[in-house]
Amino acid sequence: IAILFALRLRGSVGMAALISSKVNQWTLLVGALPIAFSLSSGTLRGLPLDARQTEELWLTSAQSLVAAFLIANLRFGRWEAWLLAILFLAQLVLPDTRVRIGFIGLYLAIFVGLLIAGGSSQRTAFLSLLRSGTPKPP
Image (cartoon, rainbow, N blue to C red; front, side):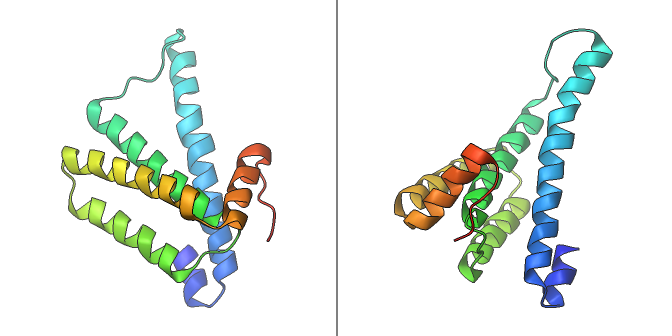
């Protein structure tokens, strides 16, 4: 859907659809599954994950952290889109466990690099997002 909006030159609507989808994924899917498992099993244990599922959860979390930083200022440049697209496509083509762990480290290194070297407005927007849950427009 986001791509269709972008092709129709409605980028802001496409980004809103993409962000909404990501929020839905993290709050409903990732947040609700352990609760449903706990309630159905009658215990307070967490949801058991195998090694691959754990890697994928870490990978998705690291990727989401970078993406959240990049869009926190409500602007999304072409280089930022290419960065995320290339990294995402590369991790699909190289599905080895060591490569996934490498990508987790790479995403975290990119996040730290952006946090240090990124503009103060982007850093402020990201920190504002963490504190209030709503980014402040530039």
